[in-house]
Amino acid sequence: MSTDKPNGADETNAFAHLVGRLGKPPPFSEEWFQSLLKDTDGIRRRAVYYSCFVNMTAIAAPIFTLQVYDRVIFHAGIETLKALVIGILIVLFFDFLMRKARANLFRAVSLRNDVLVGHKMFRHTMNLPLRELERRPTGQWIAFFNDLAAVRNRMGGPMAAQFIDVPFSLMFLAVIFIIATPIAWIPVVSGLLFLLLIWRADVSVAARVSKEQEQIVNRNGLLNELLHARTTVKSLSLALPSETRWAETQGSLIEESVLRGAAHDHYQTISYSMTQLTTVAMTSVGALAIVNQSMTMGALIAANMLGGRMIANLGQTLNYWRGYQTYVSSKKRLSAVFGIDTEKVRSEVAQEAPQGRITFSDLSFRYDENAPLALEEASGTIGAGGFYVLVGANGSGKSTLMKLLRGLYKPDKGVVMLDGRDIRQFTNQEIARWIGYMPQDATLFSGTLHSNIIFGAEHFDDASILESTKYANCHHIITKFPAGYETPVGEGGANISPGLRQKICLARLYLRQPNLVFLDEPTNHLDQQGVVDLASSLKILAKTKTVLVISHNPSLLQQSDYIVVMEEGRVRQIAPKDVIAKQASAQRKKASLQAPQESTT
Image (cartoon, rainbow, N blue to C red; front, side, top):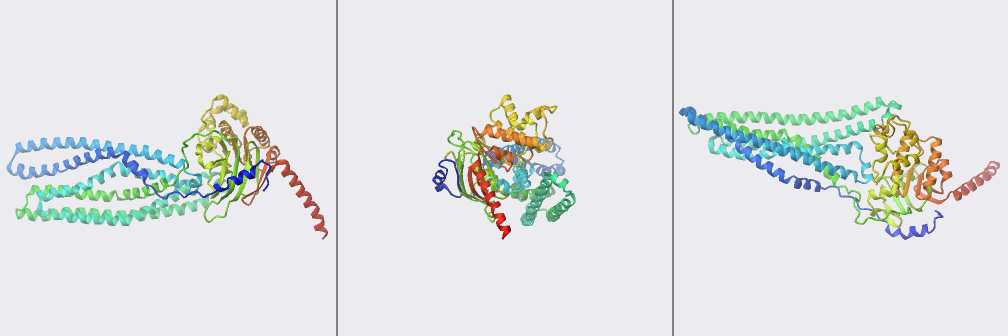
């Protein structure tokens, strides 16, 4: 490789000792969940207190029934009945207040979960490295946010209340032992059988829930992929083959849902039968105890009420078991996401903006462990200042190199230096402020032309907006719309032409006033005049900034200062345009001279 930039090779070699592989991120982290528990600890503690009162008052109705049967009916105690009714009404009034307060607390927990975890998940996802985001389909990232609902339902709401109420079944059992000792063994046996049933359901249903969730992710991923590529689907008439893929994916989901539902319903049916058998057993054995005068009628009825409440708690737990299994799976997936290291988001010392000199040394990169190298020991120097055009055959590593220089990818080996500073020390926000990068698939966001131009810009006014759109040669097009800058662009810019989308993305980049400008195939959707205008704008821009463009367009090559030649993942040459042109001319002459000799032989 040769380069005409002064001291480029020396500076490159000086940084060779900094080459090294970055560490892999940890696979799992529950720090987010522990933080959530800590943030909601006070609210959940109060909910437990209210639940204690609610479950204590649940004993009141059976005791009321016991007293009515044993004292009022057989002794005609009308005054006693009046006192009991007044007492139970007071208890029920406070029970109503406590239940309402507990429901409000659980709603507060759910709201806090949505605010805290939802925001943390979004921020964490947005700060993940680009390669991590690319490793999973879009549908899977959407599914991660759906997992937040499962965590919310477990931490707040009926499911959370149910799991708090279950331990109070022991209190109901203790009261049964006190008031109806002869039949207390029945709910004990029934309770143990219910626990065994719940354990068995856990083993059986958990695997089915996990497989169902996987199929939901696959189905949503396919749907997202087809809708994202809707233009290709329509243009190639792929509706029928797409329907076949959809039917296979949806069929797998339905099959897993049926199997999961069958397993869940099986245990639900057993639970219902066990509940009925418990009531029959308690009533039958209790009747014998009454005949033998070892228990009263009121005690039997009260014990049945308490036993029913106890068994209902366990039965409801089984009802919520699918939701609990979904929560367990969701929590594991979220923990895996939170375990991935994010990019650096904060710098201890704010550093001055760079002049625009990038030096890269021995850069190597592959997209997957088993994939071939997309970039191999690439080295060179670009800038400060000047108009560089990056050329090379398809698959030579041009876009990969640009992403590495921008800091979007981390190299497997090698280092990138920005004005002599390792680019890894900067946050993505700092790099984005200094290096304006527009990829091949630059898109717009739902909103207006104006909102897309200013999106992400820190400082702007109307004058700077107009300046950036004129520089991008789109101001005169925008003003032809009836709504002007307030024209809605639609999803991804679907309401405007591809060429205008490209120019709006350029205007958005110019508005940020970066020190370096990276453009990947910016002429894809531009007409010839648009290409000429772009080349002229970049030529002017390169007088004060470093401009690097991936393109083979003759207009851009003509206006360039330097050519960067890539071949098979390596940077073969960085030289002034005229030097490259002379070399190409010499090679053509040599080839033309050899051609007649070959034909003669």
